[in-house]
Amino acid sequence: MKTILYAWEIGDGYGHLQNLTMAARTCVRYGNPVFAIPEGEPLAEAYIRARGFTEIETFKRPETALRPDGWAAQSFADVLATYAYGNADRMAPHVAEIQSLITRISPVLTVAECAPTFAMLAEPCVAIGTSWGLPDASPVMPLYLWSQSLQGATESERLLLVAQRVLPALKACHTFAECFQPADTLPLCYPGMDVWGSSRGVGPARACTVSTPGETVFAYLDAQYPAIETLLAVLPYNARVHVKGRTCELFDLDDEMARASIVIHHGSAGIAHAALSAGRPQVCFPWHVENAANAYKLHALGVAAMVGAGEPERFAEQIRDTPESVADHAQAVASAIGDSYPGLPAVEAAVGRHLR
Image 1 (spheres, rainbow, N blue to C red):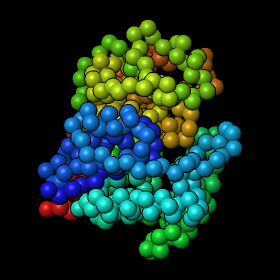
Image 2 (tube, rainbow, N blue to C red):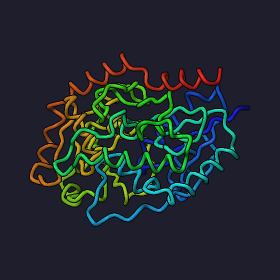
Image 3 (tube, rainbow, N blue to C red):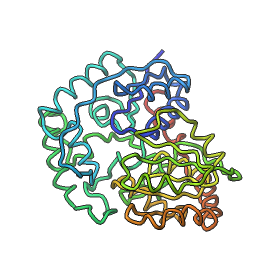
Image 4 (tube, rainbow, N blue to C red):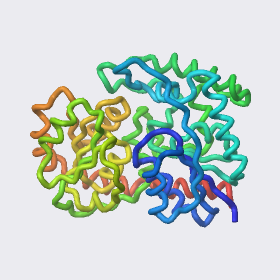
C-alpha cells in the first residue's frame, strides 16, 4: 500500500498533532499513514498511538540557538532563526537528516504541519496548520504586542539567503515563505483567525459541533506566563486545569469542550480553534506574539475576552463575567463557521488531487 508521511517539526502544543491525526484519519483511504515527529516527545507518541496510528519515525531537533534573557519571538521568521535556519552551518545537517528520513520512507505524498524542512524537501507536499506557521507573501505580521517591532522583513530576507545557500533549488523563491509553502498550502483556520491579516483560511480541522455548554471550566495555560500563580489562584473551584510545562498527561479535547461552560487559555491556536468550533466563550491570557495574535482575532470575532499579564486585578472579573456576555455570540459564530467553511474536506481534496 502507498505510504503518506504526516510530519510535525516545530512547536510543542496539541494543535499540531490534532491537525495531523485528523488529516490522517480523513485521508486514510489514499495511503498508509506514517508519522514523523521529533524524538524525545513521549506525549506526542502517546497521543498518536491513542488515535490508532502505530507507525512513527523520529528525528533529532536542532538545539535552539541561544538568545538574550527575556527574548521572545516577534515573527515566525524569528522562530525559524532560533530553530535551524539562522545560518547554513546549523541548517545543512538538519536538512540532510530530514532528507534521509524522507528517502528511507519514500512516501507518495507528505502532509506537513508546522514542518517547514519537510515542505522544502518533499515532493509532492500539502502544507497544513493554523496560520501562524504559514505566513502569507508579506514577511511582516501585523503588530499585536506593544513590544513588537517590524524587523520581520529583514530577518525573512536573511533567512531566504541562508536557505538558498543550503538548497540551491530554492533560488527561484522570491520570499522566504515561498521556500516552505507548496502550491497546496491550507491554513486550517476560519478566515477571521488568520493572524497574518489575510483571508486564506479554509476552515478549522475539527467539525463545528455546537452543543449546550457543560458546567465545568477548562483551563489550558502556559507555565511561562509571568503571572501564572496569580492566575491559578483565581480559577474557579470546578476548573479542570492543565499547565503546559508542568502537567504531563493526555486529555481528550472534544470531551473537555463538551464539559466546559468557558475555556481559559494562553492563546493556544489548538485550544482557540477547538473552543471556537464548539461555540464556547473564551478568556485569553496571552504573552508571546503568536498567542497574542490568536487572542486578538478571537476578541475581534466577539467570542473572547483578552487580559494582559500586567492586569492581575482583572483576572477574576473576566473569568466571572465573560461567559454571560459572549456565550450566545460564540455559539452563533461556531454555527456560521460550520455552515460555510469545509476545513478537513479541503485537505482531503488536495491529497486526492495528487493520488487519484
